[in-house]
Amino acid sequence: MNAEKIARWCLIVLGVLWLGASTWYEFLRYDEEFEIRAQSRGEQFQQKLKDCRGSFSERYDCKSEANREKQMATFKIWAERLSVICIPPIVVYLGHIGVMVMVERQREAARVRRRRKRKFGK
Image 1 (cartoon, rainbow, N blue to C red):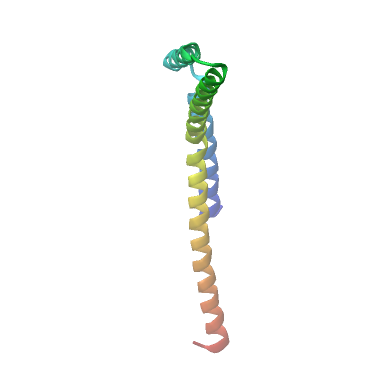
Image 2: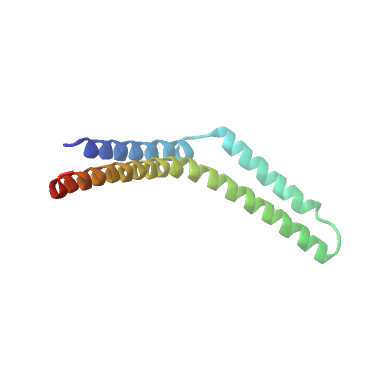
């Protein structure tokens, strides 16, 4: 096996290990603090809904705003969790591709130089 294949397989193994470990950490392990924070967020949301006063239109706008805030907070939590899982392997993969492109360009330049030397004797 050449060095490129070994490096590629090492990166694949590391990526799979990262995906497995980070998925376990973010989703499968029991996190009591997360549950407490989720319960607290739910109670805060219910309190915001109860605090909405005024005409029907004002209450509707208030509850809609509270619902949007809850959805945005949920989105941020999920985006953070998924970014911890997905972004490091993607960055490593893109770095590997960048290195391979540079290596291939150097090899191509060396092939061109050898071809010129054979053809023109320079």
